[in-house]
Image (cartoon, rainbow, N blue to C red; front, top):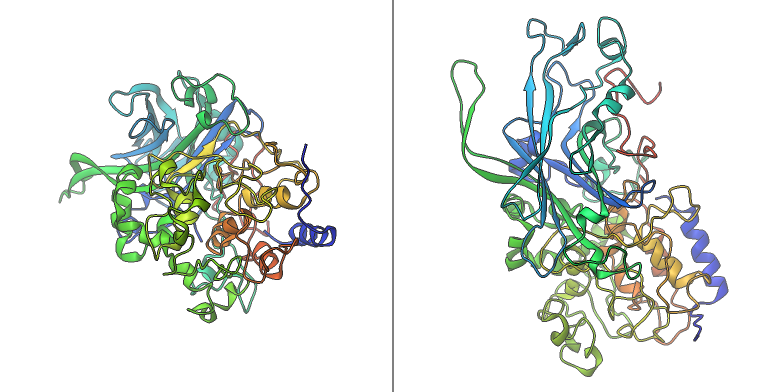
Amino acid sequence: MKRFRPFKAAALSLLLALLAGSSLLASSHREAPLIANDPLADNTDVYAFRSPDDPNTITIIANYIPAELPHGGPNYYTFGENIRYEIHIDNDASLPGDEIIYRFTFNKVNEGPATFFNIRLGQQNLKATYTMERSMNGGMSFETLISGGIVPPPNIGPRSIESGVGLGTVYQDLIEEALIMSSGGERVYCGPADDPFFVDLGGIFDLGNAPRQNGAPRDGLAEYNVHSIAIQIPISTLLKAGAPAQPENILDPNYVIGVWASASRRAVRTLRDDGAAPDDSGDWVQVSRLGMPLANEAVIPIGMKDYWNSLTPYQELEDTLLDKYFYNPELALYMDDDLFGAAVPAFAPLRIQRNALQGFDFGNGQDGLYGLKGSAAVAGTALDDAIFGALLLPGPGQPRSVDLWPIFHTGVPNFPPYQLATGKGGNPLAAGKPFVNNFLPNGGDMLRLNMAVPVTSRNDPAFSASGLIQAAVLGLTDPAYNDNVELEFIPNMDGFPNGRRLEDDVTRIELQAVAGVALAAIGLWYDDYTAGDPNPVTQDLLDVLTYSTGVGQNDKAFKQSFPYVATPWSGTETDEE
């Protein structure tokens, strides 16, 4: 077997030490003007990962209702009526649209309407139950799998939950009672949870002040709750028709799924003057959707956010109006010293390649790799129009069409040039070491997951919140993986953006991606690297890899078993207690 040792040992030791010592945007919380006024229908995050304690299943979590104050009484948060909450799954690129849809609708009753308390004497007001339906034919028909499913009440406080004048139980028992096995074989939880997303909201939205230049960072979602719809689904249920029962390898393309979530309301709402609930009628209209984190919030400009929420991923892929925001992302302007880099000092370590290999400029408005279109250099690669059409090199002045656009819109194939620089001999367009394959090109923004990739144990010392970026680092620098170009499991290949685990620091990963880290992984190194040098571990690369927003983990530990999300904060609880 041919061996490759691309990096000097000293550089390897330095890089791994820095990564080990580095610390690890609200994903979609109030991300668009219209949905900000309708929190019950507002997607906040979507997660999809191979279940760490049950790897024959995939766990999908769709969260709604942003920034729930645990003490937000007397009308505490719960899922809304007259809303369709849906989780959509695409598993076949040869067919248009979704193959599998899970639909949830909720009903609320007041068990004790004579009191202003939410819970009293064993009774709950605003008590919610749900119906879960499943379509296996793209929404043409639905089958009811759960009826009257239990939604735990809000975690108001110990008197309401534990005392004899309340429910006389403990909150964990309420969660356990709400774990339901459906008639279709899915395990389901619908209810309150600690918001699993972590980010310095105050710093990020203060014109990109993350990490904060003055003062300590703060998790803006600490001690807030959300409402989770969590489903643990057998992989066999999610496989496309004709796929083998066992994957051919750990990047089997037959095992790729796309996941997105939505909320829809009736088109017409009529308010009443007698204090009764409004009347909802008309067609169902999608008012919120979410796949990849931060897409609408940090890529799409404010004037287009409501439009984004109205589209399905399949409509979006056909709609070229939004592509320009991925080809030339606003955030990249603040990672370029020739543009507005000086305006955001917190992003100083994040600098996009303007002269990669002394020949390729990925700055906004530049051509990136477009100058190679139709040449012998790209023949037989994914950038060849004969392979994937003009998806990846659509035109001049669209430099991020080769990295950011496919990450958000098609997934990444295990095909040159989208393999690690290990073994490429300095040519980024050559075949290298495989590390990702979640290519599903028939939809736009979705969370794409290759279900064949093994689980990285949460207790493994190699587990990293840096997800697929850490897998790339190991594949490039660790002698356990970088001495060959064979397909093998590298820890964290199951991490974002190959799906999304609860622990993944997606804010950091996506900012690093805007800064060109995916380009570097395949051999388009940063500007301070001289083409031909055997050591591409330059200061610019180290700066990007060790960048941190200052908030790198959740405020509560995640559970080791389904539904994995942490118990919701109590209305009387503080982090000092």
